[in-house]
Length: 189
Image (cartoon, rainbow, N blue to C red):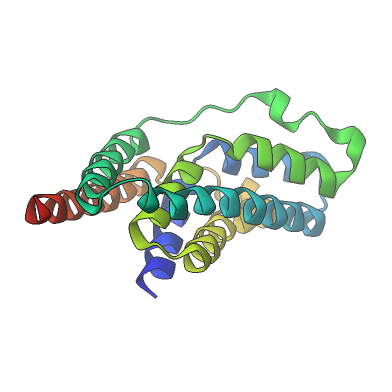
């Protein structure tokens, strides 16, 4: 259950102001059809985070527990720093309109999420908790918590969210996970 709750919370926080949330704002403004956009985000996130979680679940088999704890600890600390760097959005990510609203959203979100903070976090969380299902469900729910409001009422809330503060909280959570993993690594050493 920790895997689900931590994954949900950290991705919901990390997604605020993220390029995929910016993509959700743009798609909502462009198409004005929330249901296919939300469904496209859901399917793209499930597929992307399932791949990321599968990679994360595979990592523990490649490393000794102490080595993995060091890798995760350092990785979470790096994620904490990365959270403090604002995202930018490339307009070409939203220029697939010839496919229809759902397919455009699905493709654009899947591509935009590749190598994104939340995808990297999903890999690390799956390796940390070794719980493919709970991590995929948690990170997907976190994405939906952040992006559904962006699609439904994005124009009214875009300026009201203290993105820097939210990212600072997410960075603190990543840092705490990193310190905990390094503590385990030192204890196993």
